[in-house]
Image (cartoon, rainbow, N blue to C red):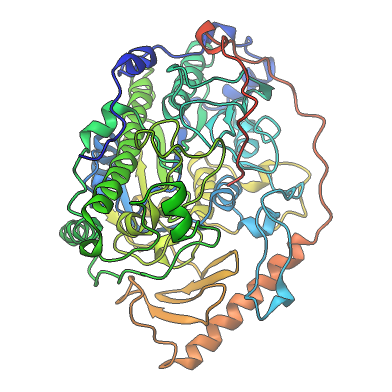
Length: 594
């Protein structure tokens, strides 16, 4: 049997990972209510609360409610009591998705991703990326709703162009450490650096992200109960390196020995039964891997002789290769399993403070599952149990293809596998239908306009921004009540030279080094039947539309950079329990930027 992470339970005992685990924040450290907040809160204390939960590198069919075999009862419950969207999209990558989610603009418009063109046509390219500073009019969601009395809280990953407090959040736990789930060196509370935490059994990123979110909510209930809140919880899971708790891995041990081909078929069958997919399963892309992946030779030398570089047929693998690959997917499943448990704890907190019924919950992923296989940070120990802190593994293209069932490609591509996300909305007090599906194409640029619609405030709530362009997203609130009720001209994508546009059911898409492909998504969402040769006029029309919108975005990108605001009021940081303060900084660990 392949050795996976199955150390004794001392680590679990110290982590106290139960539904009643002790949170790490003292709620008594909050400041007293300000006079301005009281005045804002007096205008309307019945506005709904907003909770956005973002997963990282989650595949379209990883959740049980989207056809997966992974145990996600808490998210599945939200889906069965709320709405599931079957054609929801992100940007295909971490940082542009987060920018679009919190601003309502395509990331390139606000300089949070480069405008990239195919290699043979560099004219439209604008070289700015995740380090770009947004324009002064590119406000985050908290700035729009603060005048209504909303308190805003952030916990987890960030990847934005300005710090959370500068973006309007009242409190923030920011974890920028993306090279390890069991230790952390680069994390901040309200902008103040926190001590590093070594791999001593006291830290697991997914749990701590939920701890802080729960702590912020408890503080809100104790001190601001008459005001609505916005909570943004951004988990790192299941982003690589795949690392999970032993007890969670044990749930899925040997589950994936049947292989990625069989898992794809089983997921596809469930998707058909659910009514989510009524088309053919996409073919495996056996020769496709992300740029920057380790070569097959290096993977076998540095990771394991049983590592596999490509999405080849499962039956072609040796017994040892199958066991190693199955153990990796067990860790991926365990990470999602744990994230769902922690989401359950957050939901329990909402119910405890009588806020669940009137809280609008959005759940989605920043991109599709990742085929990346690289090594960062302290490296990878081939002798360490799979999924432990000493390992640095990715699930690879075989399991990424399975996680993205029924679609093609992976994270960073703008084919459906890279950009399709599960999208769940729950609002017991506002949505009367339960368990229904919504089929309108939507994008995460729509989340901010939707929230503004729900709380009944427009972009003009921010004074002094008359030069701000219209939000590029639209409100999907009408879809809460009726499918087919939102119309739009198109959706647009661009990342790393990959590009796409969707008008109605027609999608034009191309990779960085490939020609345009044309698909009729009403018949072929798996993008298996390229119609570009049959409909050259449609290709020309959609290409012209993509280019025209890219030119509009380029004008926005080339506006003069804004300066960081010096007027943002500083917030007194929360206090931490002593068990999170005793560790020493590591001189080895570095922070990754992807």
